[in-house]
Image (cartoon, rainbow, N blue to C red; front, side, top):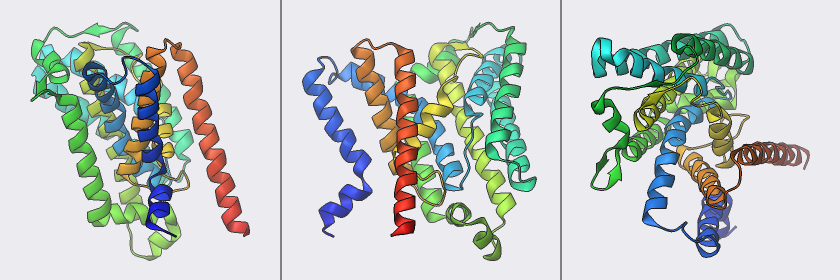
Length: 313
C-alpha cells in the first residue's frame, strides 16, 4: 500500500473536511470570511473541549451521556455563586462539583459494573433536575463583567476560548500517547481482561476517565456561560450527541481501544463546519439535529459492517 493510500485511510475525515471546506467556500458566499471562520472556531471550542474527555471515555470502551447536563449545571453554579464566593471560588466549586459527578459515574461503572449507558443517562436526568431546581427553570444572568470577559476576550486576535481548546487538545494528545495512564486507557478499551492481567488498575483508571470527561464538560460549561453571560439548565441539551458523533466520525471506535484526539478534532470540525454551512443556508436547527443523528447511525452501521467483514474474511 502506497503512502498516499495509507494517509487517506488513516486521515479520511481530515481529507473530507478539507474538500468540504473548499466546496462550501465556492458555493456558499460568506463562508470563507474572517468573521465567519472565527465564529466557527468559537463554536467548535465548546464541543472540542468536551470531546477531549469524551475521547478518553470512548477509547476506554465507554461513553458519557451526562456531559450536556454537567455543562449546564457548572455554568449555572458559576453565575449564581460568583456574587457570594467570588469568581475564582465559583469556578473552582463548579469544577469540583463536576469532578464529583465523574467520580460517581466512574465508581458505578468501573467498580459496580453497571452499563455506562444506564449510569450516565440516569446521571443526566439527576443533574438536569438539580439545575432546573436551583434556577427555578429560568436563565440566570451574570452581573460580573470579569466573568463575561473570560469567554469573550481575545489574545492577538485569537479568542481565549479557542486558545483554551488548543491547550486541552495538546494535553489530551500528550497524556494519551506519552503517559502510562494514556496507554492503559487504550489497553482497557482493547480488552479489560488483558488490561487486568497486565497489571493495569482498571477500576482506578476507568474512574479517572469519567472524572476527566466531567471536568472537560465543566470547562466548556464555564466558558459557554461566560460567552453568553448567562447560565441556564437548557444549555448543552444536544452536547453529548454532537460530541459523540464528532468523535466517532473522526475515527475513534465505539468498541474501544482505537482513536486519537487529532482524529476526534477532525470529526468535530467537520460536524461544526457542516452546521455552519447549514446555518448560512438557513436550514432549521432541528433538521440539523436530525442530520447529526443520521450521521451517527450511518457511521456506527458502517463500523459494524467493517468489523463483521474483517472477522469473517
